Length: 251
Image (cartoon, rainbow, N blue to C red; front, side, top):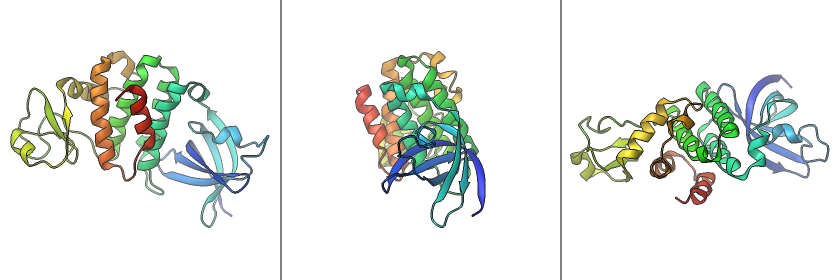
């Protein structure tokens, strides 16, 4: 069978048979790869720790008829501190779940891998108070890369001016609506001025810069609620990790 090597991030693992795993990977070019790690659940397996979620590794895979097979794996970054801390793991699970939903086999989006690695690196190093800001920043950036970049400076439907106070954000069009378009909009979410400013700042910052923005928690909660609704509207399947994270932060 032909073999190939790829650097990838392990997003999730699923039991297969008595001792194997199906590992979902996000490759360096942004494609999703699902591969079998044979014997990974056996005690002492050389693959066990190397295919844990949030691990970045160099994988050798053999092409199979339905699923590829992992024949070798070397860890580049384990992100072990994330798995050892419950709050960090909850935030990282949002990253992995969203990436699992938006990445596609044989469809490249090279920015996704860079965003994923940068986000996990920031989550591993950040103070606990910064986890919410990093999660919101990841969501707005991931949606932008997925083709749903929010527009905040004008009505996304007609291009007209929007309110200066609380606005209705169109989940379909991805932006605050003017008065005329708001009346005809089907599904909208509340967007406060603080949330709007925070999302603009988070979208423009690198993940390493996000903690330094010092966005107040009440504003972040408003921004998170908006992005949760936006993600839920556009993703093809429910993001359960996002629901659990929302419950944890009290949203």
